[in-house]
Image (cartoon, rainbow over all chains, first blue to last red; front, top):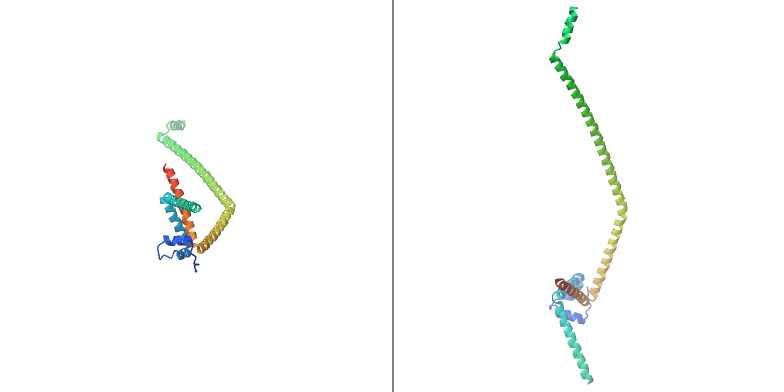
Amino acid sequence: MEIVERESVVDELIDEIVPEGLDWERLVVSYPIPALLIAAVGGFLLGRRHGTEILSAASGYVAAEVSRNVSHLIGQDG
Amino acid sequence: MAENAENAENVNTVDPENAEREGADVGVVSARQRFQRLGDELQDRYKKVSEDVRRGAERASSEIRRGAERARESYGPVAENAQRSYERVRSEAGNLSREVSLYVRDNPGKAVVIAAVGGFLLGLLARRRGDEDEE
């Protein structure tokens, strides 16, 4: 089974999250359905325990980025 | 003349023991006949009851047989449909599983993230619903 090498933002993100040395891509390709189930269950537990905190952190990050970009644009215009 | 007088005397003096025995014999015979009649009646009734029971059992058995045949006739197509639906669903599930596997093999990272985000949203919903139930 040949894995097509392709580095996307998502792949980089997952590479950062999972421990180094774990070939998650090969595991997911070898066992697709169990991998999806594990990801879904992990997401479910995370959302159930720390869902609101993660959401507020993400929305704060997005708001900060937007305001930073907007002020950058305004600064450029001025 | 003298003989006649003796006979009349004999008739008048009947032995009481003999009379008693004869009376008892008559009673015994009558009781025996009554018992015999009772026994015959009982036997007749038993025969009638057993005949009725046998007829009832035969009728019930034939009704059950007829009901089973009717059920087989009416549920046969239903069972066949259920079997066909099961086969179709199984085949569709197999196709879906194959397609999902192919997609995951082509885009492993994206598939994992989609599954995790879906689970995250479900968990969020479940938590909100739990909080509402507690309130």
